[in-house]
Image: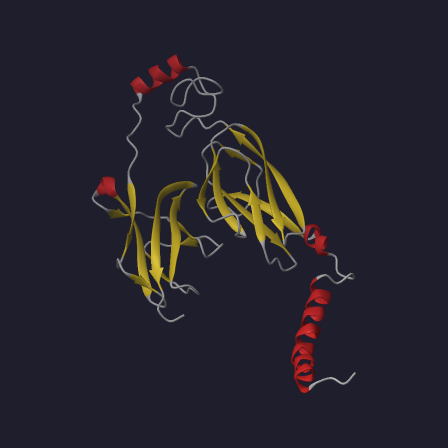
Length: 252
C-alpha cells in the first residue's frame, strides 16, 4: 500500500513530537533516578525570629521561622503546619515560612518535596506568661494554668502596672508600586509620634533571608502583571506590624 503525500507529511511532522514526548517521559520517570532521595538530604530548620540557632521549643504566639534546607534541588514544596496556627509570612508552596501557634502541646510540621516524599519535625509549644494575651490554658491574662496564680499576678500588677503596648505601622515611600523601582519601607512607632523604630528585622515574602535595617530600600521583580506581597517587621522575636502591597509590572 502506497503512502500518500499527505500521510507522509503527517508522519514527518509528528515524528519529532513523539520523540520529544518519549524523551520527556524517560527523563522525568527514569528508572535509575530515586525521587525520594531528596528527603534524605533535606531537613526542616526551626528558629526564633532574629536567631540562627535551630530550636524545637517555642512559646505560644511566638513567631517561628521554618525553612526546608538541603543539598539537592527542590522544585516544589507543600507544607502542612498542623492545627490552630497563623501563617504570618510565606505560603505552603514556599521554601521558608513564618508561623505562630495558638495551642499548647506538640505540633508535627511536614513538607512534601517534589511530590515524591515527606519530611517532618516536631515542635513543642509552651506557655507564654508575658505576652499580654489570654491564651493556652490561662484563666486570665498571663495568669492561671501554667502561669502564676491570678491573685498573685493581680497584686504584682497593682504594685508594678503593665505598660501599655506601643502600636506600629509600616510606611512605604510611594503608594503606586511598580517593578524595577526602588522603594523605601519604614517601620514607625505610632505611640511615639511615628518615631523610626530601631533594630528592625524585615521579612519580604519573596526573600527567605531576614533583612536588618530601618528604613530599608527594596526593588521588586515579578513575572506577572500584578503581584501581591506580604511584608512583616519584627523586633526581639515579636511581630510589630505587617503590610500587604500590590506591585504592578507592565513589561512582562
